Image (cartoon, rainbow, N blue to C red; front, side):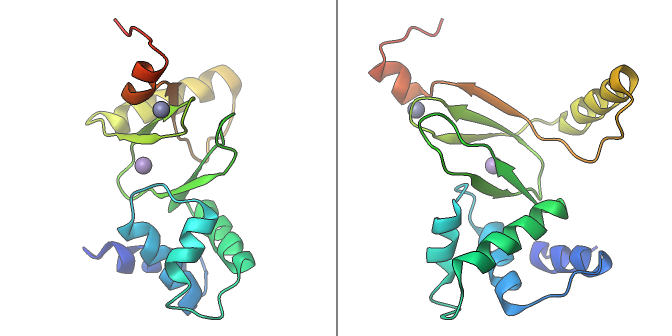
Length: 154
Ligand code: ZN
Ligand code: MN
């Protein structure tokens, strides 16, 4: 495995039989270097100047491919933020999502692997599912919105 995350990701895709194109490479690189949970439009705007002929459809299709190959996760829309957001999943982590403003905050947990494995085991035991992948979101109100909404989070 390469130490360079972009090279490692390209290797991972090659092993799954995915052909690398300049478009795919730039979108992947954008996601690896931006941890702001961008939308499709944000990614498109960020990569567009490097690839003048890039279409929004190509960004959509590339994201779908990266999600299918477990390199990127798609974060669900919320009531007040109806766009999907994307995140390179090199270091697995959880997300806290604000239901008021749509802010997405990374939560890194040392025991992520154990927690995830426990949930996969419990899922198999209780449902018989073959688990392909998993991701976790926690919903609530960010500190700023708690103040705005005058909530007391004690
Ligand atoms: Zn908020
Ligand atoms: Mn994240």
